[in-house]
Length: 336
Image (cartoon, rainbow, N blue to C red; front, side, top):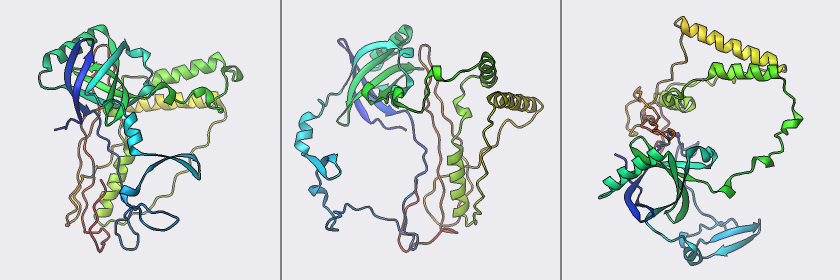
């Protein structure tokens, strides 16, 4: 059962809608701890003054803004607190805009908004009104002492809220020197038509479940095999194919490859590589790692007037054991 991370209300005009905030994604990154290679003991991170070698107590730390590598402006906690945005409990809607007007580059982290006690009816009213209008609400909210710009939209039967970056935080693409001007590169209509054919041959509906983090699956499989005591032989890295200097030849070869793949699938061939077995997250007990799988998926139902966003349930991890794993003189937690 997900736990709410913030409670407040959506405010627009004189209407307030009590809501609870939930994260809409659960990151599946495989994390590792740093260990001493000789002893297997987990390394501790300490705050040390390099000029004295002494550890600095937490209460003796202050914030400093770097002007130059040897000059800092020290800012006291009280000075920052005086500038903190007002800690309101409202999501203040400032505008309603069309979804197509917001470039995806502005989106940061997705959340769900669920009705809080007494907010079921106004919540449902807002979902239906926004869906009928085909609009997205742009609002401001303070979460954990940080002012956030957010976009709220109906997603199925719930309201989805995504934090956004401010305009001055987006890097201007015009500052990239490597991107040539359109007038500097000449393309022929035949090249454009061939590229369009390749795009059309790969076109299809967006199916979130189709895409998997294959690297994460392979890392978890490696961890499971090593936990069972299996010796891992490192395979040589395959040489990358040389780029084809002739653009038209590369486009034609790509089209032939897609058509060949479609033909083999039509004859009952495999459409893709079966993903490796995923290991289950364990409790660090002894007795050998257990082969485990686990279904994982990501996806979200879209609603009229709103695009779908990633989300959904998934599980991953590795079940570790002492059989075959390197012993350490002191306890160390498996990375999760």
